[in-house]
Image (tube, rainbow, N blue to C red; front, side, top):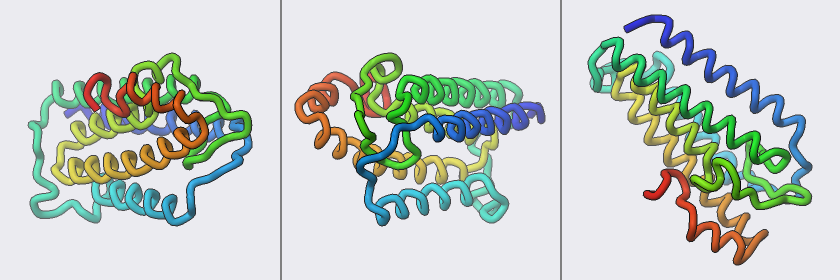
Length: 190
């Protein structure tokens, strides 16, 4: 596998982190936050997924077995998924504007965004992150990455359900209509 693919993926994830960091300074103040217990559970699940999938601690036994062959085609396909996922997440972040937060919140003067990537899925940041994670898993090729992706999917689904509850309470029938028209994470499917 071309070694530069892993380097490019690292830079894409770092770029995403930089966008998130800068975006934190432009967010509106929160008027409501998810409970600390919920936030702690989601954070712990995400941390566990990262440790299992992307550190050396779980690089043994069946977890270390490859699930795809080592080839340039596989590496470039994974890189394309990471690029598309990060791009989609960043696009969504810009559309969300000051409503964005790293934790589930309702912001002061919160608005329901339904344009751009939010016309495709209700949680495009999560969709983009999942696509980028899947691409990373393909490049790293080990079964433990699939376990990590499953944990991250569970984490983002938990977080999205909390968000949806907040949005229904904030926007009522307007959000329920949006929910009927646009799928949560995968366009036309889920």
